[in-house]
Image 1 (cartoon, one colour):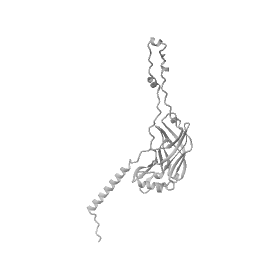
Image 2 (tube, rainbow, N blue to C red):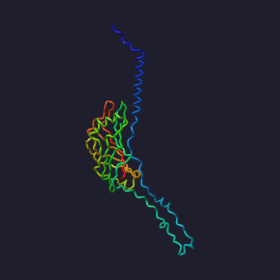
Image 3 (cartoon, rainbow, N blue to C red):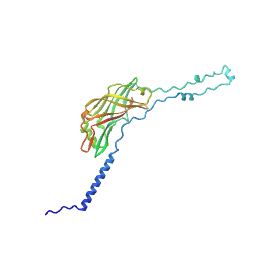
Image 4 (cartoon, rainbow, N blue to C red):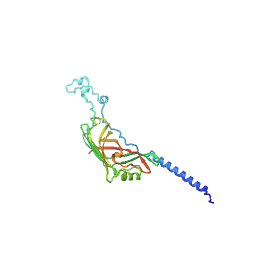
Length: 269
């Protein structure tokens, strides 16, 4: 007759403790993941051209000194000019010229943003880099040419395992090292040129990603910040359109699309 298997209270207690630790650890992991992603890139605060209002010009004009009658009649005394003729009102400062070629400068950033489920918790995976090159050309109030290229191999997130998978299995950076956008239609930036510090425009061009090139149209914010022109926007990307492997793995399951986001500071050189 077989002996009945008995579970000792000590063993049950150990199993209970292990379950509590496992649940608590998973809860803490989920809480650590939630809210840890950086926010989307946004346009900076604009710098507008300084101007002088008519009211300010009037109050800033000094009142001419009126000479006594006897002195005024002397041929050696200067004549009293009318107020308008004596002091000219300050002219508004003209907006700066944007014509010429601008290049990507320091402080620029680009990368990806995609929603994923990691360890059962919803999360936004974000990878970014500052290794970016590019330029844009402005002539007579229009953006006539523009492009930028992102070094995909230098993109990093908050998880090294994700970065390894991104570079080797997903983006195959050894074969496709860069993501590039090229403008194909001119863009009217007249509001910015006329003195406004900020303008939102639609941009059309070709996005080359993972060896595939697709036409794209998307809005961007163009903002003047001192002597810098910032261009911020995001491009929706469906992975299958560019032959990109499904990023999902046993630990993280991602959606079938994401965004290429960027905030580029252009300076004149």
